[in-house]
Image 1 (cartoon, rainbow, N blue to C red):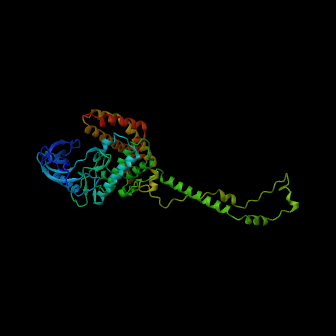
Image 2 (image 1 turned 180 degrees about the vertical axis):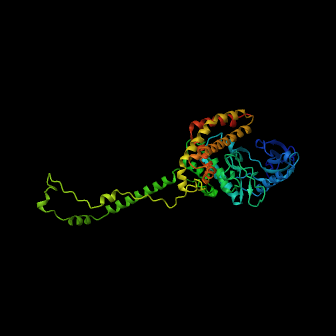
Image 3 (image 1 turned 90 degrees about the vertical axis):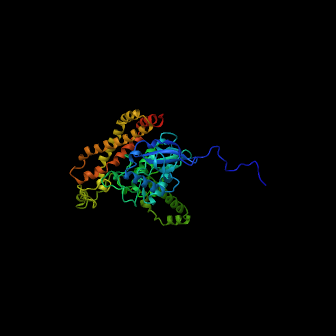
Length: 465
Protein backbone atom coordinates (compact mmCIF):
# COMPACT_ATOMS: atom_id res chain seq x y z
CA UNK A 1 0.00 0.00 0.00
CA UNK A 2 1.38 3.41 -0.90
CA UNK A 3 0.45 6.92 0.10
CA UNK A 4 0.30 8.98 -3.07
CA UNK A 5 -0.07 12.23 -1.09
CA UNK A 6 3.32 11.98 0.63
CA UNK A 7 6.40 13.81 -0.66
CA UNK A 8 9.80 12.24 -1.02
CA UNK A 9 12.46 13.54 1.36
CA UNK A 10 14.62 14.26 -1.67
CA UNK A 11 13.11 16.93 -3.88
CA UNK A 12 14.71 18.15 -7.10
CA UNK A 13 15.94 21.72 -6.79
CA UNK A 14 14.42 24.34 -9.00
CA UNK A 15 17.97 25.46 -9.84
CA UNK A 16 21.02 23.16 -9.84
CA UNK A 17 23.25 23.45 -6.75
CA UNK A 18 26.76 24.52 -7.72
CA UNK A 19 29.60 22.25 -6.59
CA UNK A 20 32.03 25.16 -6.52
CA UNK A 21 32.30 28.13 -4.17
CA UNK A 22 30.01 31.15 -4.48
CA UNK A 23 28.58 34.12 -2.55
CA UNK A 24 31.90 35.23 -1.05
CA UNK A 25 31.49 37.66 1.89
CA UNK A 26 34.54 39.08 3.74
CA UNK A 27 34.20 38.76 7.50
CA UNK A 28 35.01 41.57 9.92
CA UNK A 29 37.74 39.59 11.65
CA UNK A 30 39.65 39.43 8.36
CA UNK A 31 40.60 43.13 8.50
CA UNK A 32 44.34 43.47 9.02
CA UNK A 33 46.88 40.70 9.57
CA UNK A 34 48.42 38.26 7.12
CA UNK A 35 45.22 36.31 6.44
CA UNK A 36 41.88 37.05 4.84
CA UNK A 37 38.76 35.30 6.20
CA UNK A 38 35.64 35.04 4.07
CA UNK A 39 32.25 33.38 4.27
CA UNK A 40 31.40 31.31 1.18
CA UNK A 41 28.76 28.84 0.04
CA UNK A 42 29.17 25.40 -1.49
CA UNK A 43 26.39 22.90 -2.22
CA UNK A 44 23.96 25.17 -0.42
CA UNK A 45 25.96 25.26 2.83
CA UNK A 46 27.96 28.11 4.36
CA UNK A 47 31.62 27.66 5.27
CA UNK A 48 34.51 29.87 6.39
CA UNK A 49 37.60 30.12 4.19
CA UNK A 50 40.91 31.37 5.58
CA UNK A 51 43.75 32.18 3.17
CA UNK A 52 46.93 34.24 3.03
CA UNK A 53 46.76 37.72 1.59
CA UNK A 54 48.55 38.15 -1.75
CA UNK A 55 51.49 39.93 -0.12
CA UNK A 56 52.21 36.87 2.05
CA UNK A 57 51.41 33.99 -0.32
CA UNK A 58 55.01 33.50 -1.48
CA UNK A 59 56.58 33.70 1.99
CA UNK A 60 57.48 30.22 3.33
CA UNK A 61 57.13 31.24 6.98
CA UNK A 62 53.51 32.31 6.53
CA UNK A 63 52.74 29.24 4.43
CA UNK A 64 54.10 27.10 7.26
CA UNK A 65 51.91 28.96 9.79
CA UNK A 66 48.81 28.36 7.64
CA UNK A 67 49.62 24.65 7.38
CA UNK A 68 50.33 24.45 11.12
CA UNK A 69 46.95 26.02 11.94
CA UNK A 70 45.23 23.53 9.61
CA UNK A 71 47.01 20.50 11.06
CA UNK A 72 46.23 21.50 14.66
CA UNK A 73 42.60 22.34 13.93
CA UNK A 74 42.01 19.26 11.75
CA UNK A 75 42.97 16.98 14.64
CA UNK A 76 40.34 18.46 16.97
CA UNK A 77 36.78 17.21 17.28
CA UNK A 78 34.77 18.77 20.11
CA UNK A 79 31.30 20.26 20.30
CA UNK A 80 32.70 23.55 21.61
CA UNK A 81 35.38 23.97 18.91
CA UNK A 82 34.63 25.18 15.37
CA UNK A 83 35.48 22.25 13.10
CA UNK A 84 38.32 22.38 10.56
CA UNK A 85 37.10 20.55 7.43
CA UNK A 86 39.97 20.62 4.96
CA UNK A 87 42.76 22.45 3.12
CA UNK A 88 42.20 23.11 -0.59
CA UNK A 89 42.82 25.67 -3.35
CA UNK A 90 40.00 28.12 -4.05
CA UNK A 91 39.89 30.26 -7.17
CA UNK A 92 40.71 33.87 -6.38
CA UNK A 93 41.99 33.10 -2.87
CA UNK A 94 44.63 30.39 -3.27
CA UNK A 95 45.17 27.68 -0.68
CA UNK A 96 42.44 27.93 2.00
CA UNK A 97 41.59 26.33 5.30
CA UNK A 98 37.93 25.28 5.13
CA UNK A 99 36.19 25.69 8.49
CA UNK A 100 32.75 25.32 10.01
CA UNK A 101 30.52 28.40 9.75
CA UNK A 102 29.06 29.39 13.13
CA UNK A 103 25.83 31.38 12.93
CA UNK A 104 26.04 33.77 15.86
CA UNK A 105 28.22 36.49 17.37
CA UNK A 106 31.56 36.68 19.12
CA UNK A 107 31.58 36.79 22.89
CA UNK A 108 32.99 40.34 22.62
CA UNK A 109 29.89 41.40 20.66
CA UNK A 110 27.55 39.51 23.00
CA UNK A 111 29.03 41.21 26.06
CA UNK A 112 27.43 44.47 24.97
CA UNK A 113 23.92 43.18 24.50
CA UNK A 114 21.33 40.97 26.17
CA UNK A 115 20.84 40.11 29.82
CA UNK A 116 23.71 38.71 31.85
CA UNK A 117 23.29 36.69 35.02
CA UNK A 118 25.35 34.21 36.99
CA UNK A 119 23.81 31.18 35.29
CA UNK A 120 24.69 32.44 31.82
CA UNK A 121 28.27 33.29 32.80
CA UNK A 122 28.87 29.91 34.45
CA UNK A 123 27.30 28.04 31.49
CA UNK A 124 29.66 29.79 29.05
CA UNK A 125 32.71 29.26 31.25
CA UNK A 126 31.89 25.56 31.68
CA UNK A 127 31.81 25.09 27.90
CA UNK A 128 35.05 27.03 27.46
CA UNK A 129 36.67 24.93 30.19
CA UNK A 130 35.49 21.72 28.54
CA UNK A 131 36.99 22.75 25.20
CA UNK A 132 40.29 23.90 26.73
CA UNK A 133 40.61 20.68 28.76
CA UNK A 134 40.19 18.70 25.54
CA UNK A 135 42.77 20.87 23.75
CA UNK A 136 45.28 20.61 26.59
CA UNK A 137 44.83 16.82 26.79
CA UNK A 138 46.18 16.72 23.22
CA UNK A 139 49.26 18.72 24.32
CA UNK A 140 48.02 21.84 22.48
CA UNK A 141 47.96 25.39 23.86
CA UNK A 142 45.62 27.89 22.20
CA UNK A 143 47.73 30.96 23.21
CA UNK A 144 45.09 33.52 22.14
CA UNK A 145 42.02 32.91 24.30
CA UNK A 146 39.96 36.12 24.26
CA UNK A 147 36.31 37.17 23.71
CA UNK A 148 36.76 37.83 19.97
CA UNK A 149 37.97 34.23 19.47
CA UNK A 150 34.90 32.73 21.14
CA UNK A 151 31.67 32.42 19.15
CA UNK A 152 28.21 32.10 20.73
CA UNK A 153 25.62 30.46 18.53
CA UNK A 154 22.44 32.37 17.81
CA UNK A 155 20.52 29.55 19.45
CA UNK A 156 21.16 28.40 23.02
CA UNK A 157 24.44 30.29 23.55
CA UNK A 158 26.54 27.31 22.48
CA UNK A 159 30.27 28.10 22.67
CA UNK A 160 32.58 27.57 19.70
CA UNK A 161 36.29 28.39 20.01
CA UNK A 162 37.77 29.69 16.76
CA UNK A 163 41.13 30.82 15.34
CA UNK A 164 44.02 28.48 16.10
CA UNK A 165 46.45 30.71 14.22
CA UNK A 166 48.60 31.26 17.33
CA UNK A 167 48.21 27.74 18.73
CA UNK A 168 51.17 25.50 19.43
CA UNK A 169 51.72 21.81 20.14
CA UNK A 170 54.55 19.80 21.66
CA UNK A 171 55.37 18.02 18.40
CA UNK A 172 56.26 21.27 16.59
CA UNK A 173 59.93 22.16 16.90
CA UNK A 174 59.70 25.43 14.93
CA UNK A 175 57.36 28.43 14.80
CA UNK A 176 57.61 28.98 18.57
CA UNK A 177 57.42 32.79 18.54
CA UNK A 178 55.56 34.48 21.45
CA UNK A 179 51.87 35.03 20.77
CA UNK A 180 48.78 36.48 22.40
CA UNK A 181 46.81 39.70 22.84
CA UNK A 182 47.70 42.44 25.32
CA UNK A 183 45.46 42.30 28.37
CA UNK A 184 44.88 38.56 27.98
CA UNK A 185 48.47 37.37 27.63
CA UNK A 186 49.92 35.73 30.75
CA UNK A 187 52.82 37.60 32.43
CA UNK A 188 55.31 34.76 31.86
CA UNK A 189 54.85 35.10 28.08
CA UNK A 190 56.00 38.72 28.16
CA UNK A 191 59.33 37.76 29.73
CA UNK A 192 62.32 36.86 27.57
CA UNK A 193 62.29 33.16 26.78
CA UNK A 194 58.83 32.66 28.30
CA UNK A 195 57.02 29.52 27.19
CA UNK A 196 53.28 28.88 27.02
CA UNK A 197 51.49 25.99 28.68
CA UNK A 198 47.93 25.31 29.77
CA UNK A 199 48.33 27.74 32.70
CA UNK A 200 48.79 30.53 30.14
CA UNK A 201 45.35 29.74 28.70
CA UNK A 202 43.96 29.59 32.26
CA UNK A 203 45.25 33.15 32.85
CA UNK A 204 43.40 34.36 29.72
CA UNK A 205 40.29 32.48 30.88
CA UNK A 206 40.48 34.31 34.23
CA UNK A 207 40.72 37.72 32.55
CA UNK A 208 37.61 36.92 30.49
CA UNK A 209 35.78 35.76 33.62
CA UNK A 210 36.64 39.07 35.33
CA UNK A 211 35.13 40.98 32.39
CA UNK A 212 31.97 38.86 32.50
CA UNK A 213 31.65 39.38 36.27
CA UNK A 214 31.57 43.12 35.60
CA UNK A 215 28.41 42.61 33.51
CA UNK A 216 26.46 41.04 36.37
CA UNK A 217 23.82 43.18 38.10
CA UNK A 218 25.52 42.68 41.48
CA UNK A 219 28.98 41.45 42.55
CA UNK A 220 29.49 37.69 42.64
CA UNK A 221 32.27 37.06 45.14
CA UNK A 222 32.65 33.37 44.30
CA UNK A 223 33.26 34.01 40.59
CA UNK A 224 35.51 36.97 41.41
CA UNK A 225 37.66 34.69 43.59
CA UNK A 226 37.99 32.23 40.70
CA UNK A 227 39.00 35.08 38.36
CA UNK A 228 41.67 36.28 40.82
CA UNK A 229 42.95 32.73 41.30
CA UNK A 230 43.27 32.18 37.54
CA UNK A 231 45.09 35.50 37.01
CA UNK A 232 47.79 35.06 39.66
CA UNK A 233 51.04 36.47 38.27
CA UNK A 234 52.91 33.34 39.41
CA UNK A 235 51.81 30.35 37.26
CA UNK A 236 52.37 27.99 40.21
CA UNK A 237 49.68 29.81 42.20
CA UNK A 238 47.04 29.39 39.49
CA UNK A 239 44.95 26.25 38.91
CA UNK A 240 47.38 23.85 37.23
CA UNK A 241 44.68 22.35 35.01
CA UNK A 242 41.36 23.69 33.74
CA UNK A 243 39.68 20.69 35.39
CA UNK A 244 40.87 22.03 38.78
CA UNK A 245 38.48 25.01 38.51
CA UNK A 246 35.38 24.34 40.61
CA UNK A 247 32.43 26.06 38.93
CA UNK A 248 30.15 24.72 41.67
CA UNK A 249 31.89 26.89 44.28
CA UNK A 250 29.26 28.25 46.72
CA UNK A 251 28.85 31.96 47.33
CA UNK A 252 30.50 31.77 50.78
CA UNK A 253 34.26 32.21 51.00
CA UNK A 254 36.33 29.19 52.20
CA UNK A 255 37.05 30.61 55.66
CA UNK A 256 33.41 31.59 56.16
CA UNK A 257 32.30 28.10 55.13
CA UNK A 258 34.77 26.60 57.63
CA UNK A 259 33.47 28.91 60.36
CA UNK A 260 29.89 27.96 59.56
CA UNK A 261 30.70 24.24 59.64
CA UNK A 262 32.48 24.65 62.99
CA UNK A 263 29.51 26.56 64.44
CA UNK A 264 27.11 23.87 63.28
CA UNK A 265 29.31 21.14 64.76
CA UNK A 266 29.43 22.99 68.09
CA UNK A 267 25.65 23.40 68.07
CA UNK A 268 25.15 19.69 67.43
CA UNK A 269 27.57 18.83 70.27
CA UNK A 270 25.65 21.09 72.68
CA UNK A 271 22.32 19.53 71.71
CA UNK A 272 23.72 16.02 72.25
CA UNK A 273 25.17 16.99 75.65
CA UNK A 274 21.85 18.52 76.81
CA UNK A 275 19.98 15.45 75.58
CA UNK A 276 22.11 13.04 77.62
CA UNK A 277 22.04 15.33 80.65
CA UNK A 278 18.24 15.43 80.67
CA UNK A 279 18.14 11.65 80.42
CA UNK A 280 20.00 11.16 83.74
CA UNK A 281 17.82 9.24 86.29
CA UNK A 282 16.17 11.31 89.01
CA UNK A 283 17.53 8.89 91.64
CA UNK A 284 21.09 9.94 90.80
CA UNK A 285 20.21 13.55 91.51
CA UNK A 286 18.62 12.67 94.88
CA UNK A 287 21.57 10.46 95.80
CA UNK A 288 23.96 13.27 94.98
CA UNK A 289 21.97 15.62 97.24
CA UNK A 290 22.22 13.13 100.13
CA UNK A 291 26.02 13.22 99.97
CA UNK A 292 26.23 16.98 100.66
CA UNK A 293 27.62 17.48 104.22
CA UNK A 294 25.28 19.19 106.70
CA UNK A 295 26.14 22.65 107.95
CA UNK A 296 26.62 22.87 111.78
CA UNK A 297 23.82 24.73 113.51
CA UNK A 298 26.13 27.11 115.32
CA UNK A 299 27.76 28.25 112.07
CA UNK A 300 24.86 28.11 109.69
CA UNK A 301 23.74 31.65 110.44
CA UNK A 302 27.14 33.15 111.21
CA UNK A 303 28.38 35.86 108.87
CA UNK A 304 31.23 35.01 106.58
CA UNK A 305 33.40 37.78 107.99
CA UNK A 306 33.25 40.07 110.97
CA UNK A 307 32.21 43.56 109.83
CA UNK A 308 35.04 46.04 109.80
CA UNK A 309 37.80 43.45 109.68
CA UNK A 310 39.95 43.27 106.60
CA UNK A 311 41.84 40.02 106.00
CA UNK A 312 45.60 40.26 105.89
CA UNK A 313 46.95 40.27 102.35
CA UNK A 314 48.87 37.19 101.33
CA UNK A 315 52.59 37.99 101.20
CA UNK A 316 54.06 37.86 97.73
CA UNK A 317 56.75 35.39 97.04
CA UNK A 318 60.15 36.82 96.43
CA UNK A 319 60.97 37.40 92.73
CA UNK A 320 57.44 36.98 91.40
CA UNK A 321 56.98 40.66 90.50
CA UNK A 322 60.29 40.83 88.68
CA UNK A 323 59.53 37.64 86.78
CA UNK A 324 56.11 38.85 85.62
CA UNK A 325 57.51 42.12 84.28
CA UNK A 326 60.09 40.44 82.10
CA UNK A 327 58.99 40.11 78.45
CA UNK A 328 60.12 37.09 76.44
CA UNK A 329 62.85 37.84 73.94
CA UNK A 330 61.76 38.21 70.35
CA UNK A 331 62.43 35.08 68.31
CA UNK A 332 62.88 35.39 64.57
CA UNK A 333 60.91 32.86 62.54
CA UNK A 334 62.94 30.05 61.03
CA UNK A 335 61.62 30.76 57.55
CA UNK A 336 62.86 34.35 57.44
CA UNK A 337 64.44 35.09 54.07
CA UNK A 338 67.14 37.73 53.57
CA UNK A 339 65.80 40.97 52.13
CA UNK A 340 68.36 40.90 49.31
CA UNK A 341 67.00 37.99 47.31
CA UNK A 342 65.58 37.48 43.84
CA UNK A 343 62.33 35.94 45.05
CA UNK A 344 59.14 37.71 44.02
CA UNK A 345 56.35 38.72 46.40
CA UNK A 346 54.25 35.71 45.50
CA UNK A 347 56.92 33.14 46.40
CA UNK A 348 57.32 33.68 50.16
CA UNK A 349 54.94 34.93 52.87
CA UNK A 350 57.56 37.14 54.54
CA UNK A 351 58.35 38.87 51.26
CA UNK A 352 54.66 39.13 50.41
CA UNK A 353 53.97 40.97 53.68
CA UNK A 354 56.60 43.63 53.22
CA UNK A 355 55.29 44.47 49.72
CA UNK A 356 51.60 44.63 50.60
CA UNK A 357 51.65 48.47 50.90
CA UNK A 358 53.24 48.75 47.46
CA UNK A 359 50.72 46.39 45.85
CA UNK A 360 47.81 48.21 47.48
CA UNK A 361 49.10 51.60 46.33
CA UNK A 362 49.66 50.24 42.83
CA UNK A 363 46.13 48.85 42.56
CA UNK A 364 44.70 52.22 43.55
CA UNK A 365 46.99 53.97 41.06
CA UNK A 366 45.89 51.65 38.23
CA UNK A 367 42.27 52.35 39.17
CA UNK A 368 43.05 56.08 38.83
CA UNK A 369 44.74 55.45 35.46
CA UNK A 370 41.64 53.59 34.25
CA UNK A 371 39.42 56.52 35.20
CA UNK A 372 41.73 59.20 33.81
CA UNK A 373 42.00 57.46 30.42
CA UNK A 374 38.27 57.03 29.82
CA UNK A 375 38.28 60.33 27.92
CA UNK A 376 41.12 59.01 25.73
CA UNK A 377 39.09 55.84 25.03
CA UNK A 378 36.01 57.93 24.18
CA UNK A 379 38.02 60.02 21.73
CA UNK A 380 39.60 56.99 20.03
CA UNK A 381 36.31 55.11 19.76
CA UNK A 382 34.51 58.17 18.39
CA UNK A 383 37.14 58.53 15.66
CA UNK A 384 36.81 54.89 14.59
CA UNK A 385 35.20 54.35 11.19
CA UNK A 386 34.08 50.74 11.78
CA UNK A 387 33.23 48.38 14.61
CA UNK A 388 36.58 46.65 14.04
CA UNK A 389 38.45 49.94 14.56
CA UNK A 390 36.35 50.63 17.67
CA UNK A 391 37.31 47.21 19.05
CA UNK A 392 40.96 48.06 18.36
CA UNK A 393 40.51 51.25 20.39
CA UNK A 394 39.42 49.16 23.38
CA UNK A 395 42.45 46.90 22.95
CA UNK A 396 44.62 50.02 22.81
CA UNK A 397 43.00 51.24 26.02
CA UNK A 398 44.05 48.09 27.88
CA UNK A 399 47.55 48.25 26.42
CA UNK A 400 47.76 51.85 27.63
CA UNK A 401 46.66 50.83 31.16
CA UNK A 402 49.30 48.11 31.37
CA UNK A 403 52.04 50.39 30.01
CA UNK A 404 51.26 53.26 32.41
CA UNK A 405 50.88 50.80 35.31
CA UNK A 406 54.33 49.32 34.67
CA UNK A 407 55.87 52.79 34.37
CA UNK A 408 54.35 53.77 37.73
CA UNK A 409 55.69 50.58 39.31
CA UNK A 410 59.21 51.22 38.01
CA UNK A 411 59.12 54.82 39.29
CA UNK A 412 57.77 54.12 42.80
CA UNK A 413 59.18 50.68 43.63
CA UNK A 414 62.56 52.14 44.82
CA UNK A 415 60.71 53.46 47.89
CA UNK A 416 60.13 49.81 48.89
CA UNK A 417 62.98 47.84 47.28
CA UNK A 418 66.47 49.04 46.41
CA UNK A 419 67.05 49.18 42.62
CA UNK A 420 70.37 47.41 43.18
CA UNK A 421 68.64 44.46 44.82
CA UNK A 422 67.91 41.34 42.73
CA UNK A 423 64.38 41.58 44.05
CA UNK A 424 63.77 44.80 42.15
CA UNK A 425 63.51 43.16 38.72
CA UNK A 426 61.66 40.15 40.15
CA UNK A 427 58.97 42.40 41.61
CA UNK A 428 58.65 44.40 38.38
CA UNK A 429 58.18 41.14 36.51
CA UNK A 430 55.15 40.39 38.70
CA UNK A 431 53.66 43.88 38.36
CA UNK A 432 50.79 42.68 36.18
CA UNK A 433 49.12 41.11 39.22
CA UNK A 434 48.36 44.47 40.90
CA UNK A 435 47.50 45.93 37.48
CA UNK A 436 44.83 43.27 37.02
CA UNK A 437 43.62 44.00 40.56
CA UNK A 438 43.30 47.70 39.72
CA UNK A 439 41.32 46.86 36.57
CA UNK A 440 38.92 44.75 38.62
CA UNK A 441 38.52 47.58 41.14
CA UNK A 442 37.57 49.87 38.27
CA UNK A 443 35.04 47.36 36.93
CA UNK A 444 33.40 47.07 40.35
CA UNK A 445 33.10 50.86 40.70
CA UNK A 446 29.63 51.82 39.49
CA UNK A 447 30.64 55.35 38.38
CA UNK A 448 33.53 54.08 36.24
CA UNK A 449 31.60 51.17 34.80
CA UNK A 450 28.61 53.31 33.84
CA UNK A 451 30.84 55.57 31.75
CA UNK A 452 32.78 52.61 30.32
CA UNK A 453 29.54 50.93 29.24
CA UNK A 454 28.30 54.17 27.68
CA UNK A 455 31.38 54.32 25.47
CA UNK A 456 31.14 50.61 24.67
CA UNK A 457 27.49 50.65 23.69
CA UNK A 458 27.75 53.93 21.76
CA UNK A 459 30.80 53.20 19.62
CA UNK A 460 31.21 49.42 19.64
CA UNK A 461 27.89 47.66 20.06
CA UNK A 462 25.45 50.04 18.34
CA UNK A 463 27.76 51.31 15.60
CA UNK A 464 26.12 51.29 12.17
CA UNK A 465 28.25 50.22 9.24
